[in-house]
Image 1 (cartoon, one colour):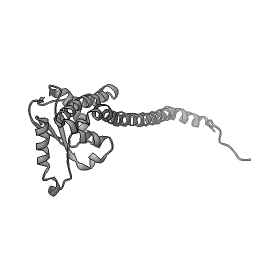
Image 2 (cartoon, rainbow, N blue to C red):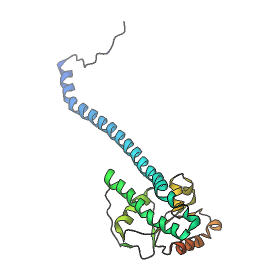
Image 3 (spheres, rainbow, N blue to C red):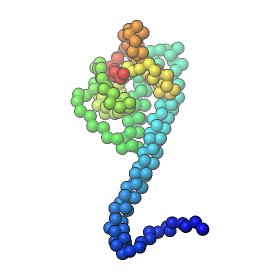
Length: 208
């Protein structure tokens, strides 16, 4: 017959019981911390999945809901199409900021000069995180006067190939670079074209 370990602690003397009682609080605390750690991991994973679903889903739905209806105007009246995309972008941007603040409890603390939509600005992001552009939307939403603005982002060309995200960036006329001067030397002309069609090329974010 195989001996099975009893599901409870067994002791051979009172001294063993005494030592076990002394270590019991530590064991319970250690077990509690392990359980809390597992719960936190589960909640973090669920929050991450929810975050990706909301942000990426909002991008896709925003493209189909807001941008697709005005796409025909790119062949009919391009100036109206460009004004329309410049008008719709701050609305979608504010929606992302609302997701961060209302659902995930993100708080924005902003200092420095106010971003004036009537003036041209170049803003450099130091790439502290891959989502710095998303948090910068909070600065644009809370620190731009008036809230409507014409923001264009300069970034790597490979991003435009990402389904959904890349489509929205191309529709918003972001400037894509390949980090090769022989190819990117004409980007100045592209920026000029963006400015001429949109009339006011107000805010450019350099994000490389």
